[in-house]
Amino acid sequence: MEKDQYYMNLALQEAKKGRFQTWKNPMVGAVIVKNNQVLATGHHIHYGQNHAERDAISKLTPEQLFNSTLYVTLEPCNHYGKQPPCSDLIVKSKIKRVVIGQVDPHKLVTGKGIAKLKSHNIEVKTGVLTSKIEELNKFYNYFYRNNKPWITIKEATSLDYRVSQNKNTRTNITNQSVYFRVHQERANYQAIMIGSSTAIIDDPSLLTSVKTDYPPIRVIVDRRGRLLNHLDLKVLTDHQSLTWIFTQNKDLIRKKFNDNIQVLLMKSNELSEVVNKLAQREIQSIYVEGGPTLARSFLNEDLANELIDYIAPTFLGSAGPAGVLPRGNLNLHNVQIENLNNNIRIDGEINV
Image: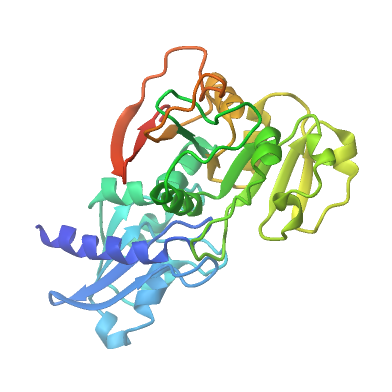
């Protein structure tokens, strides 16, 4: 492997250490090399704390940093946020060369960090392992390139494509391996969305077993305000995570809930309004776990990017409702198929 790729791969592995804790920030890793020796590594450990570059630099002396090479998976920032600019620190540290995996798509950063380094005669190289690094922060990149969140629809179905055995009843379809996998998936997203029917029928907690300081925000679409008749649901009483309810019912707007719950008024029936409001709140990714009706609306409004279907080797019979049925043809791309102890996971992209 070419030297720059080798060290950038080390930085990529460092970046992965921040998974589930960087929240709105991307996962970033850094490696400092001098005389073909790795002197320090670092990563963005936690939202609001040191960036990867600062983490690595803080472990070395000025003499070690002088004329060294910094490998960083994402372009160093050049603005004041929760941390001061990393570009200033790199210049001050007298690092000679900076190798960058990916240019940051955030408009506050794009190109500015690189320009700052070059203006101080620091050699800059970009485009090393870019595709792998972009995949690591896929939702972050999509959000800042398109100004909207990445939306994944998840469903679990039987071999006869049913989501439950009877209408308005909950049926456990998939196995324990799928259960653990779904909890991992939830933790990768900033919001989990369901409709009011799923909230009422399944009474889910929508939590994740993954240890994180930033559990997904629970989003419930309840246009008619049906939750007013089901105030004992877990999502309304457990105090476990932020919960945002979107409704057109003004009585639900006026209802007093726990401090972790916020009710927001919808001006239309369009899901795009909900998605836009979530984008304004910088929600970069949404995991849709609602029933077929909500999923179909996302597909028919051309809002979904990805579909994950967990299929169990069972037949539930004709009395049960079918899985999502879009109104037209739907072809999945970049499809991945996986066996999870006799259940099948099919994952494919829709609009990218």
